[in-house]
Image (cartoon, rainbow, N blue to C red; front, side, top):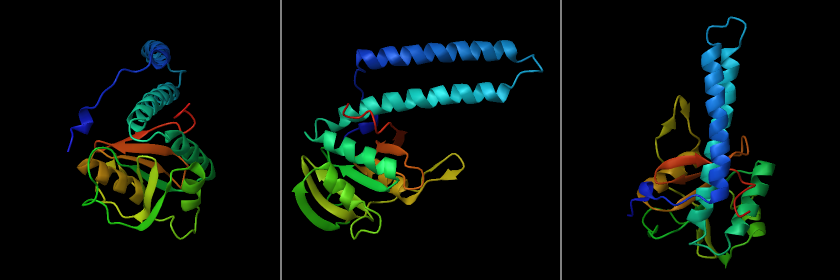
Length: 211
């Protein structure tokens, strides 16, 4: 398996400019926080939350840019994935989408239902429609084809802080720990979108990939 955790690429100039602007904003917030520590009439917790919110935005912006770069060499139709994930997120329809890259996944995935259809946003959305016969498990995408649905992935026991991750997120991380696959997750509880890569989980903005 490739050392996916070390994969890097140069961020586009527009993304760098946006990140620099927001990092400078954090510098100002931290400086203000330092100066306000001795004040009794100031809400320090509010300042921490403001900085945390900016950091979350920075993380999401960078992750979204990386995600598009990770996707584009392995499917020409990543725009369809972008649209489907955005719609699934808006409707809070849980989803788990595996994009196969260089590593074979035959020994890692318990095969589900063969699909063998051209990748499209409408087909992805219909597969993950709640209560449908294929909505449980993961969809496997290879090149521009949806290979199968209802696949079962290896599950990781990883947790984030004190919060135990849900089954979809642990399954995504589990597969990414053993392959260079890219796995996209939509939470049915919150609609939040993230991807697993190299054994790590990254939040991203569904409205920005492919844009």
